[in-house]
Image (tube, rainbow, N blue to C red; front, side):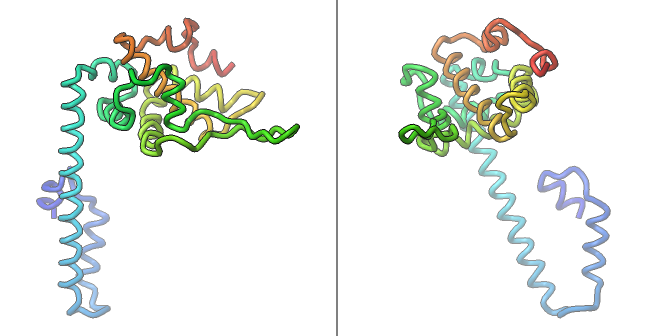
Length: 214
């Protein structure tokens, strides 16, 4: 079992799971004759899982290679918390960001731009347009998780949006705001050719998370 686990990328077997497996194999209950077939199906599933992981790793390698060929790796990863894979996934959906006249146009292309619901004198809640490229929204949304934790600007922004007294946002709404910010900043660093700068991203304020929350 240790050999099979390490062959599939694991470090060491979990003793609790190993004990449970051996206990199930030695349990006289059930149809004993069916066990070899069940274990064969488990082996096939494990092989499919490993094949999927290998294909994913190869796809990620090719994506980062293209990013490096375009000379964009340094610019993308200058945004703290955004990996080369995350940036490549976004750019795979946007194409060349320079084709968008403004960063807002890119955000709108992803369907992350807010839109008020208006009908005569009635004004409803502001919601996302829901239009644009779902794949781009997904790529930006996935980039939020690493950026929010590693990037002090995004972390402070999230804390402020979810803790302010007026117009407090839900965690999902705040993460949507951060996803749009990532797209805007990515558009800026690529179109200008300048690395991400915390002072520019915070408009020169450089607030700490505690200061912004206050």
